[in-house]
Length: 217
Image 1: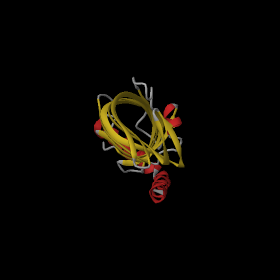
Image 2: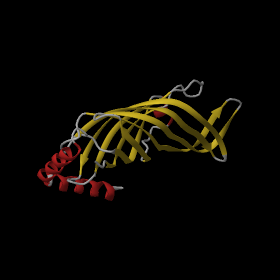
Image 3: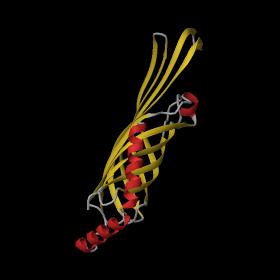
């Protein structure tokens, strides 16, 4: 992963040197498409890092460094797109051998806590600009979030499998690689999952994402 991030950084640095040529190509595209001042589509492919908030953080305090997210979008006008996305984050933490009490008894052993979340959502994004080396945008996703929560102590497993409704506001920045249709994508998302049981009222987590975006004109 460090090698991938290093390659992305080098690519971004190289794209800055092509800024003048990139401006020429953008203007040429505008001249070709006239008022059609947005890409044909947007595809993002991100590595995702998750950080638990609230009750999820109380359950697993370690950050998640095993995550992925991708989405596809189509434009309804120059500044707004709609689309859908899918991804996952895996939270995991182990605990030393100890005696753990529960209703009706106790058990001694090493403990492992696990939380998996997979969003399957629709989204909408607003694009402030399609020009320049830094292109900010904001978005909102909503839909179903599949979750698995597991506690293992020795050979004893306790597992929950749930589909829950959630929403995810987000902010992202796209930085094109010179004249290419590809670019570096950085985003931050606040994932809010609504629970209505007595085990975990909400499972909120914050995610930081870095990856590649494909935006062909």
